[in-house]
Image (cartoon, rainbow, N blue to C red; front, side, top):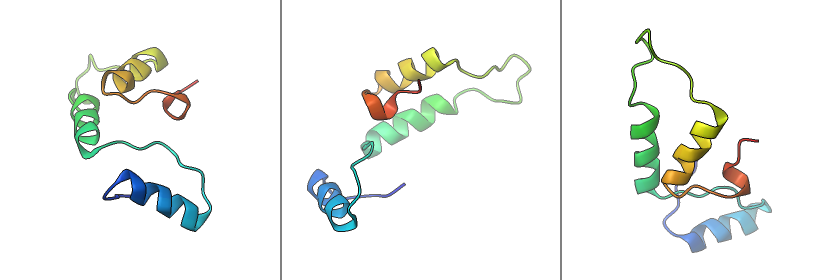
Length: 72
């Protein structure tokens, strides 16, 4: 994970390193994702892994959509 100060900074970094732009999320989106991802204790015997569909719905609920965020 890399942190940038602006969208322009992301674009400049990609140009400088000759790399395609990947997925970009804000600090707020990262925080929301972390909260949702770790809200359930994996030690709980009733815990189960999210399905692909559930994970994609979670990503979409915080605005992470498109080809980069697709799990299929």
